[in-house]
Image (cartoon, rainbow, N blue to C red; front, side):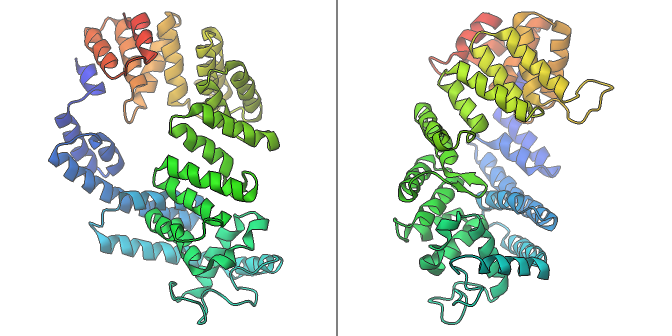
Length: 434
């Protein structure tokens, strides 16, 4: 029963584990242990873990800012916004000041000159850096900015550069409220940004886009989808908005609402004009809609372009399993292992992913083939588990079936109790663990 308690620990066990993890400086792992536990002690410890996690993410943001990676900085700032409970405001404010100083320090004279040169080539002058009235000058309508005018203008310029050229000219008309909102969003303050954006014109495409981003950061897929549809209607079609494509984002959040058929329709409409858009997301939606031959075709093409992407091989294996082609699924997973040089004595550039190891071990244990290798893969996969999921527990049960573990009946019962009525995994448990 030791294996079972590891996969399905009690609430008290999880609280003790969380305390230990927090003491060892692992607030994220501690938080994951506490999710779903209703005991007051767990809630208090959860808040403490999240506050520590907010500070840790701010420290990571500073490190990435020093490295010049603004994308990862943004990711960590969004997490800070989510986890900061205001329990240590002085520490948080000090770290935010340090982050601003780091990012300001990277704005060297050559980079600033380059941005000015590019700004002069634009038809519009939304930031006032080339001679027009700046939002930050004394004649601005309100005084929402810090006195560091040059730094703020540079930050705004970087944001504007992500917009398509034909939409940039509309930024100036949106004024300081819009500018401050997108800066707040950049700093991870999605709630504050959304409140400001909701007061602006519904017919402004960039307002609808930034509302969508804010809603997505807040975990509201329905609101995100509503704003994205409004954005596409105003500009005529979905667009590439820097690092994100509005059509891909709409497909993703539509699937998150449970409408996988609608999500597939969205991505298909995008691919009419941009046939390569969607990639793995398109394949996942095809699989969810049981359009397996097309999913196979899309994935094989993607793998030719990205031969070292282990996630693509694992997804291809799931498509083949869904179609009843289990041997071909195993072939795909073995190809991932070979392509990434995972065998001892080879280059070792990239270790096998947990998903590939778990999928291959599960296939072999279910089919009763390659049993020694399967057990080895299972051991490797389970050693990589940070937060056990159903698939990990199922693999552990398959190992118990193969090795004659006494915990198998209890593990089988626990697996079934976590599934809803009609879940196809119920048949899988009955077939392979019955």
